[in-house]
Length: 454
Image (cartoon, rainbow, N blue to C red):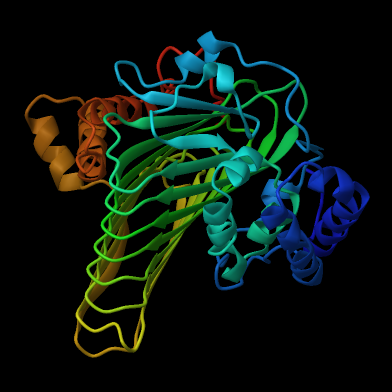
């Protein structure tokens, strides 16, 4: 990896934007283009977050940028083989499928629910101009993270998804996000999802690489949940272990909205997940889960920020990690209860198992409370497998390796059981078991063999 620092990256990307700004803006909607200058100016001023700052206390973001990449400014000329795309689908899961190749929607390999707008960003701005202008970059602009600013400056590709008021999607929407190519590539993908009033949907995000090249996916997704909307968001991250992923998901919940978010991280050499939820309407409820299974030299960092801005909202948060080899895991969880957010109910928990003595886990759960009529708790544990339980199982004829496997699977099941799509829950459990056993964990019969660096 090249030796880099924040100043070098700042100068590199600022110069790149200035050189290609005309191409970046060409053909893109005005609500996107008018945000770019402020975003690149902020990035040029601050550079990337340094390790040790509050949000990146345990993670050196330079690890994701210390390679030479090409940049996906224009659509990929290569068409995605539909059979390869299909192999990334969850077997037996009946879904509407939206295929995204290097950030750009592949319409030929996509099926869209009737009555729903699912298209690229430029087309989305034409189809729903008022909605797009109202919500694009509204959540992202206020975030103090310059990886998001970098995305705002460069983004040309991504998905616009609008579920109209009172529409219930009859089956899940699966978004298969594929990175492919013969050379290293950086993709700044931007997504905007608006769930209309009273709408209901389940969305499954599947992130994959179709080659062993190094990729950097800097993905920003803004999700707006209007009153009484219900949204399940499941994410399976399965990039090759040469690649890096920075996934920022920014969600606004309005009155009586219900959110279930569940993230499973299997592969990816460097993964940073930012999940931020603004509870902006009374009686909103968020249930947030995450499970990471880092091995080898993987580095997986999950950061969450739950902002209780109004009274009478509920948030429940559980993140788990099973670490092996020389893997490093990190969790930073922050819950803010604002002064007028009385009757808040917030619980946060982070539980971790270090299977090997060489693995490391860093955790920092935080509560910041400015209201007095609340119920809030947080906690974190880092340990190893229960030796008494292992001894008990071995006394009953179970081999040591199988006993360890059973204990780790039971530990992960608390997250798996929250999935409200039965076939997906079964597939999650299968992929988790394969991963824990050191086997291939790809979706379906994917031909892609993820790297298992030791």
